[in-house]
Length: 89
Image (cartoon, rainbow, N blue to C red; front, top):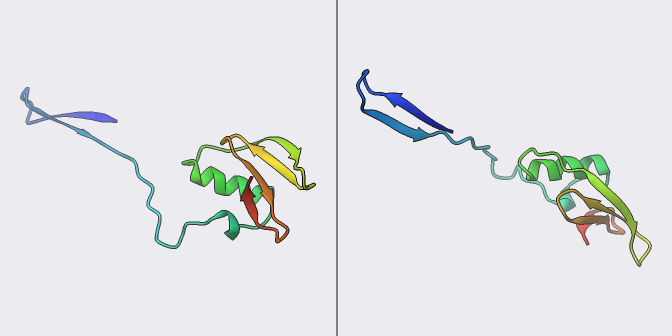
């Protein structure tokens, strides 16, 4: 967002940019292996990584090894390992 601020009512002014930034404390980041093996947890993580823009499931498919995989709106497909952890397939 650009703003123009007049300088004491004259024609001289200052233009500056305001940037919104989310601060993440070190250690607050999560990875796929850190979240529970639920769709809700996966969607929440992907939405946070996508800057708050909601990521949703587009389709469910069955992989060659019989596992269920989820095609998401971020363009990637996710499945659970035998250990219950999410992975990108």
